[in-house]
Amino acid sequence: MMKPGLPEVFFIKDMLIGEKVVKTQRNLGALKSVFADQEAFDSMDQEQLAYEVYSYLPVEEGTDGGLFFGITCMYPIKVGGEYLMTKGHFHANRDTAEFYWGIEGEGMLLLMDEEGKCRLEKVFPGSLHYIGGCLAHRMINTCNRVFSFGACWPSDAGHDYGSIEREGFSVRVYEEDGHPVVKKVIDIE
Ligand code: M6P
Ligand code: ZN
Image (cartoon, rainbow, N blue to C red; front, top):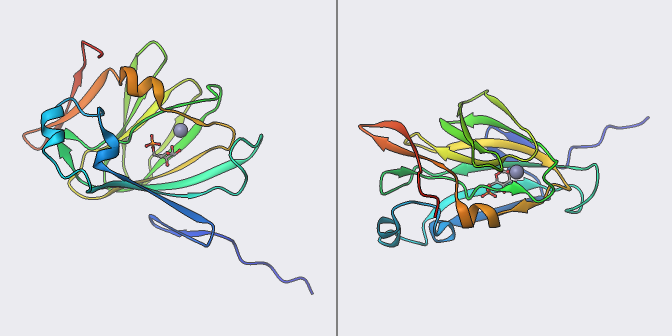
């Protein structure tokens, strides 16, 4: 009789478990020039853990037609009043999409097209976000605890961090009186 095999990977809430799970940690120091207040950034512990990504990459990066899966846990850090953000990226292969969904805590998804036009979506447990091709995406932890989200993206998408590092997003989210406040960045450095 044929016996069903066990899955290679499984998840419980925001934990991705399995031998093939790869863990990537980003310390605050890896987010240089992400935040507006450079002085506040420089005064903080660069070694502190900002967020970690647990990924399941069942095929080689660049493979046509494959899928990757990840869970990201972001810590409640603020830099000069600005909420912690992921680095954010376009896909190197612009014509590829991605799903994000909220698992724990609350945050915002910041989307930006190639002309710099931005849009924000609220993220919470159970929210699902389709990120179309040609859109840069960045997550923001707007709560005072861990914010975690899931992601599924094509294995031939690739990450293009360069344009975001150079020009940034045209919107920033700050905490004011305990609430998120969205501000447009006029001068894009
Ligand atoms: C999600 C996916 C990953 C990405 C991660 C962190 O899990 O989109 O591809 O690496 O978020 O985002 P970033 O790479 O922009 O720091
Ligand atoms: Zn992506």
